[in-house]
Amino acid sequence: MRSVETVLALVVLATVVAAFAHRLRLPPPSLLVVAGVVAGLLPGVPTIRVSPEIVSLVVLPPLLFAAGEELPWRDLRAVWRPVSVLAFGLVMASAAAVAAVAVALTPLPLGMAFVLGAVLASTDPVAVAALGRRLSLPPRVQALVQAESLFNDATSLLLFRVAVIVGISAGSVSWGHTAVEFGVLVGGGLLVGALVAAGAYVVRRRTEDPVLETVLSLITPYAAYVLAEAIHGSGVTAVVVASVILGTQASKLTTARIRLQLGAVSATVVFLLESVVFALIGLQLPELVRELSTTTPWPVQAIAIAVTLLVVRVLWVFPLSAVQQRRRGARRPTWEVPAVVSWAGARGVVPLAAALSIPLATQPEYRDLVLLLTIAVIVITLVVQGFTLAPLVRRTGVAVTSEDVRREHVSARLRLAEAGLAHLDAVAATEAAPEFLVSQLRDSWQARMDRITEREPDEAASVSAAESYRRLRRELLAVEGAELNRLYQAGEISDHTRRRIQRTLDLEHAGLGDEDGL
Image 1 (spheres, rainbow, N blue to C red):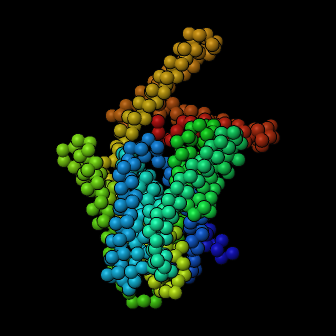
Image 2 (image 1 turned 30 degrees about the vertical axis):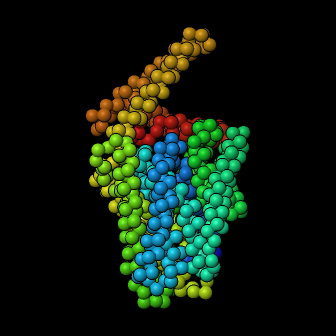
């Protein structure tokens, strides 16, 4: 019962903090971590033990799936070369650098230091996606940081398994066996991810029940993760592959009505899991500090490791960016984009899951120190880089401006409306529909184009005709909704009829967009 109360308390805390983060325009993960640390310092807060299964099996798959769905295949193809370099070379360099610093500054032996380096070597896709949603980065830059965090897991996971064999089991490593294991890890993840995506595609294409399709969408990441782990492949890779494939087919999978429902459910699940897991990361730190009976200056060690990760990342990203720019014919390499990419390497849920999965060995004090340093580095990167990433993006000027977004949106809406009018002309020419219907729809589509073009970019403060139209439509829908409730309260219609009509009104209201949107 205490566990249920703790989860409910975390959900309430996360919801309140996320609401304040939205109002203050701060990244929710960073604020949630701070709130978790503060809550963990309060007297009377119960000890929270997080099992690795909870993080890796319950929390991680849907969050990875959501992050993968946000990655466009077109942008991924454009950045696969630098992503490959970062996902392999940078991960190994980061692991080696952290291990060297840990040996020099901490009492960890070389084997456990390498375990710590492998745990912290890769950036976290959940944290990167959560921090990057509000930054309006250019598509190529957003795809680069997100794809790197999604595809560097296989390298870090292999390093982690080798490190556990060497550092904890004191076993010998066969490089031939390691190569085979890496092939199984990557190949198994890719194969299972593709098969699960294909199966989900076939089933969802033949399903029109919104409840059933929602359930299928929710269990897909879990199926990919569990099946991949069952054959000793990378569950994270399988989830990422399945999400990227299904994300490219989203418009073909289901109807518009079901897509609205899936979007709402997915956003709710992601919000709850992200909120709870980032709050848990913060809560773990004070408890580990109290339990670790050592005089080791862990704050200095954690800061040194976090700085090491950042320095190594800078030393890889800037030369790689210079090479890429020279290939594109740039005379002088610029610093703005590599600075943002370097600073976007936050750690989060994946390192936490790896650290929690370290087996209980004959030296538990070293395991506790690795876990403490891991969580401390996660907190440092989420707080320091999380709170300063948006100002850095504004300072460098790489973000896409709101005017550019608005102009692209208007242009696309006009192209769609023009395509619709062209189709109406074709229908009228073949007399495939009555003339009065074609004329009515043509007037409606022409009015839509007029509403789009009447928004003047230089008159943002004025109320345009399009805004007045949407406001009046909302008022009419509100009047209809009130009348619908009156009919139901008077007993003139059934609850079933009320719900069906209310959903129709809700869909029409959703089609009007945000209060200040296009």
